[in-house]
Length: 418
Image (tube, rainbow, N blue to C red; front, side, top):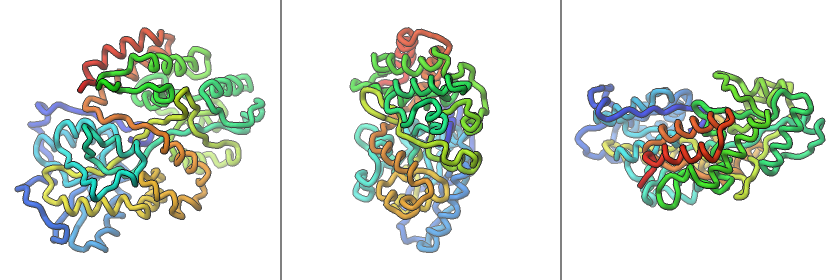
């Protein structure tokens, strides 16, 4: 998923079976042809749903037989609502689905497999496609991508005698030290545990050559690579370069502007945020690829995909709307509206991106998508993420990385298995 943290909570089928939602889909199972008069029900998330309603109106002009009804659902409640709707047989025809939600709903057997004769995975960045695949079958079409880049204060770096972006984690650690020695309160911004902290650690794991799931289908979170990733991540707290206390609601754009946290890792939307909220910083910061480990610069890749539910009677219309939303032209238009990175590679050749004021930063994120790695579609991702975050909190407070990785391995063995 994108934007800093969109929690997805799962609830058991035993609980939700008694819940009811207004009917949005389901029915006899008789399929409507794409050219039949019909209403296509779609669930979208948060602010994106509002924009999607406008896009749907344009789609309806070219497809007057299809009325698209978009229902906004908050990111904070979407897990409960979708799980309840699945239990009640009242899912919509299709939905936007966050990347870390895919495993849960694939496991519930609610999603229609993607027709790969219609959607070519070669059109999309590998990690955006692979996030939707379980046992060789794709269950979602990538809509937009989320990836991490490094934001750093070039003016403060130059004062500290550094004239280029850090290429490795060792370089980044040295830059953080230079910032602090130059007067910054901290050297970098890292979240020391709590919800969403995994998003700041996976790039350490992936660039080290580690993974969440091993080739044997079991947890790999106790591997030597995971230990090393915890050591490297934890060194920023150990050396006083990142604050150990988590501050809910803290605004990294403000601490970045003040020079208190002169480097941080985040997604592409922060480019616009900084330009609009901190205009005095113009020319004083840049984006760069994430620092590299032994396996190079490797960001985790999230975002959202478009899924069609098995019980829908409007699969042909859903496929048509999905095709419309994932063309290079529409992906580029969506970037203009939402500042979400296109998942379709060809969108980056569209003028909205090539001629954008953010073109320099976009080139960084585009390159990062080529080398990025997906978060695997895991049924119990929420529990796994919580276990990782608890481990990170202990390491940030001085816990031994090797010992904590061993505990993490034990905790996640029952959550990750094939």
